Length: 189
Image 1 (cartoon, rainbow, N blue to C red):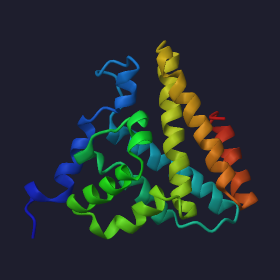
Image 2: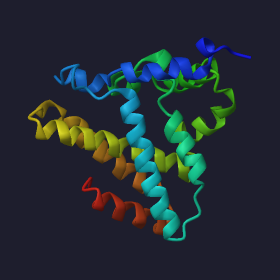
Image 3: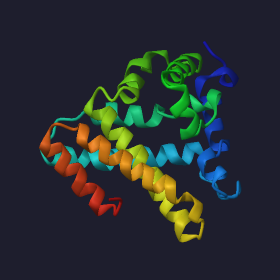
Image 4: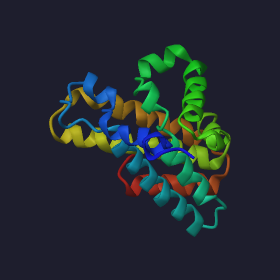
């Protein structure tokens, strides 16, 4: 049995100390830069809101699975750090393989398949969490814009484009419409 010092949660708590690198590279001071744990919390809440709205509209979605994906989607960053989009675009699927390996090393081997649903967008839950991830980033970017940090404009724009592409992947028109309506209410699109 692992001791408290070696428990998988002991490392995961370090996500509170890892600032999201994209903000730092755009001039956000470390003292106010969003950390990975805060981002993950917001992604989980947005996932919850989107899933509850889908369920309310008669869409079959596994809320537990979606929340598990949301909570775990950035856990590998404890070992990998926050890799910026520029690097992600150049290393391709190596990042995904590293995320799976990191998740295993951190003691979450049982959750590898569920993380794969997010990485490969192979389930509606994975797609919804990816949308929630982009929404959380847009919301944070909009806050930085309100504070006068204009260099984050490209992050907000690129994440909005990412949401549009994800919406195009959703074949179920009811799901697409409910998500679009929810994003409108969040003033994201």
